Length: 496
Ligand code: NAD
Image (tube, rainbow, N blue to C red; front, top):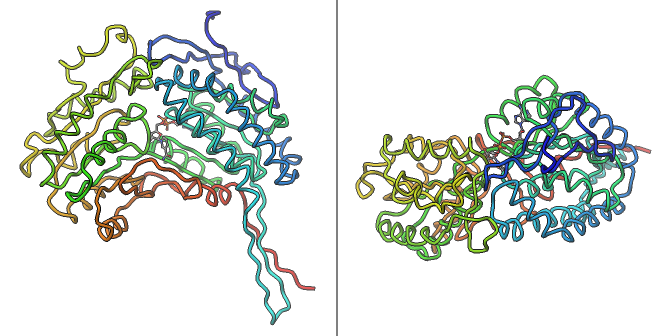
């Protein structure tokens, strides 16, 4: 084992512990392609120890007052905030994103997650009714579910983990977390910060390792009645099938293939700026990124011209450079997957206007040669101005690529745009660009998605439900929805 590598351990019952099987995995820095950390390759025994620890901690944590739990959550938020620079550097190195992005978005959102749910749990509503004919008083109470399994992906590692963990803890549950094996470092660092904030031992346990082993042992564990999972549709549906016989509570936040609808009456430069941002932020590795842009034909050429001009400003480069807009994608395998979609686009009617074509690859700075970089790529139909070109069946229009690749196609009327936007199996989010309020109200009702942004993107309010329909998931997260998921509601009928 190289002494230079950062060594992660599981976090169980308040202690950092080596995996029982003694095996470790390398964690690779996507910007360099070299291993920089090692994480436990945990198995079912490690998961079992973590679940037992969470079970032991549950009675006293759930018995604490909401105010006492809220104070600890606030202290965790403060700890994360005090370590903003360190965590942003770790997140960037582990995931590939630019440091400034982690500093501006990922880590502040993790702080906000804890601060928001620290207070949200103090304001929850219970309902009461009185039935005069029976002299009966009814009301509902909410109790925590127990030990929750929290499984998170690699694209926004600390942000998405804490979006689960904060409401889970606020509601009085204890947790076993399984972060992505590709990006475990900030979750591991969080363990110490939570301890420093006064979180009692065993309330949060962290088991690192692969999905097929540690992840699956967690979702199948009989003492884990609720699983909150964010990741791919493939694995989400597998978890649903595996846990069906055990009738577990499931929250599934899955993939997307999100459309933007650009109408001719919009503020075009603003729509272009937003669509470039929504296509390429975080290297296109946000489940909410846009990857299909439908543009009304009368403004299509001008939109495309401005889009390409704006995209040219999105510099790919060193994650530490504040001018870098795109860092590296998360892994060599993921880069290969993205490139295969780009390379196969011409065979399905696509034309690559900029980005990772074979000639453009030479434009990558030589010092990034061993990193997993992909240039922001725009694909249009081979005959974009006619009705031919990129069909909804083309793989780049149909599948979630999860990289800096966006397709732009013209449309002729509102009904066609809605139909095409809805043509995929996913239903996570959509963006609309128009100045016509009645059109916006009409169109947003017809889009089969969990969130519609009009004339903006990624403006998030944790009070609002978040989640997807169709194969983008089951359930919603956000203030009420999260607290509902992490509690059981009980109706009590009292007669004296
Ligand atoms: P993934 O499904 O491969 O893995 C997600 C997590 O599940 C990881 O921690 C992984 O180790 C674990 N896992 C894998 N197999 C498992 C199994 N059999 N049992 C239990 N756990 C298992 O997804 P990913 O590649 O890490 O993330 C990218 C995907 O996540 C994309 O599809 C993206 O759209 C989606 N995503 C969705 C949202 C959302 O809110 N809807 C947010 C972010 C990412």
